[in-house]
Image 1 (cartoon, helix red, strand yellow):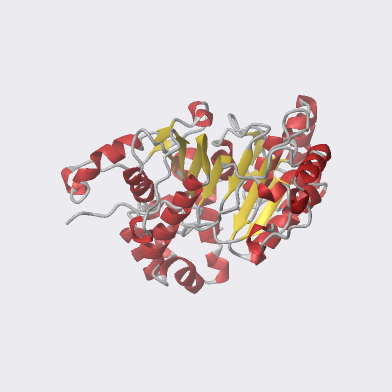
Image 2 (tube, helix red, strand yellow):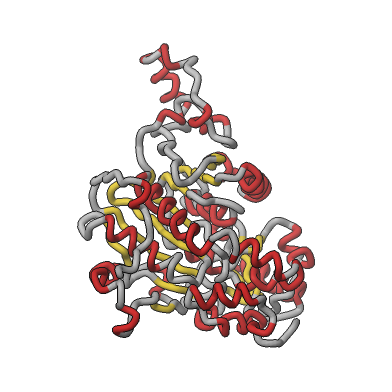
Length: 413
């Protein structure tokens, strides 16, 4: 692998993007030292002995050190990042999938429990969705909770469906997918006892006029098992217990993703990250996704906002804009339990000098409220970059905002 400093490879436009977004170019120099991560599928169903045997098998196939990730159940660290999944018998057999541990931490930060109705508002390509489905089934393999995945792209939703059908097993019985815009998605959680034929028959007998009623296209899942696609299941009025907003971003924190442009051509990096005014448009999109995810969350529920960007404008500014719209008695940024153990997380960015507070002075209280959010800095965590905020909904206040008011923090001049 090329050992030149990252700055010597990146095109001028990307270097300008990094400078504009206050991203230290040196962070990309650790890419060559990062491990590869995989997740053990159906980890909760495996004994300690089975896990040890699987680790040993992968160690043999990869011809390098393989170890469990402390504090993040089911994740393995493969020392050689160039290890091809196709050379691992465990991957061919469907026992593992490729997934960076930073993404796993974002999903696990929801603290999903069996019986929860979970909304994954930006679900493609589906690795987190698959993990969430497994978490619902962790209680003796039985769950009456659901996972609803949403993505605006039918092509990406098709990728999610393929992953679910290939790896979810019986868990796919409580996953439904919608090809819709996450900023306006409005389908509520499935109705209680959607899985109980006796309950469905009873309702049909009480309300025979509903039996043949057709759903509108907006209510119809793009993909769902039969019981989750019935009129009964789709007529629920409850909000979701857990919401994951792993928002669309510029992916600059995914070091492996950025490095791929060395093969694909650096000119494509300009198109997908730098050009098309993405530095300005992406934080607005993220703010709208976060706001709609919050609207779909039950009082008392938990929302996780995450990105794989290192830009403060896509992270702290978006979270700060959200908190400025929602008072302390509505939204609480909580400590992430998973990160109180062995995972090396870093504090979020906060203004640290008078110069950085210029234009943000009136938001000191907002920054104080977001102190429990975290960053995963590749130089510290040995993972891809990630921003994670776990937010508890404290009240049932539902405020409607004009679209132009749903925005990141703005510097006051």
